[in-house]
Length: 222
Image 1 (cartoon, rainbow, N blue to C red):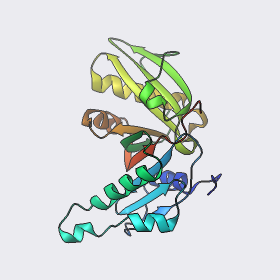
Image 2 (cartoon, rainbow, N blue to C red):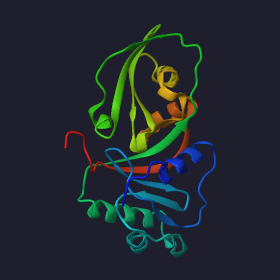
Image 3 (cartoon, rainbow, N blue to C red):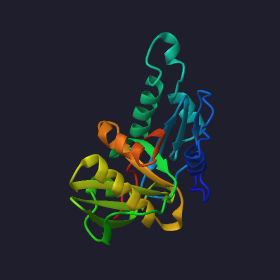
């Protein structure tokens, strides 16, 4: 399978960022590899998109959306597909997150943005073209980075160094929107185990799109 220039998963995520979600038809689609370091599984409500070098027949064989009818957790079919896909891809490193997105925004910031710093290594392993920034405002400080995620989408990572976490986190995400190239949709992968980060992102205008699993199958430097 080849990497498409206008990849179906990126189109699906862009539409979801505008509130146009895939139909909850119980299907799992195989859409081919993305450009970048990762293969991807994106789980929407009763609809899954698999961006990896696997066929539609392989996905059909390993996915089922009818488990909820037997009184089981309806996400079991997706979990089984994730496990099978990880094995098929050679059990690469994985990152699971709630993918969120926000439109670009330029506006007043009370703090100062300067370039520099080191990105979080775990986040950076799955991204390319990474740019890092420091942010300071009265009584608070932090850092953020933007980089290219799967399919060359722009993503953000932030860290609060000093000050009230919620307020500073919102300032950092607002700052990231102002420096995002091309001023398109900005995505953010929020860890499922940290609802605090999800709340901060939500308060900053980021809306949840899907649960996403990244498989680090093409790490940089190889």
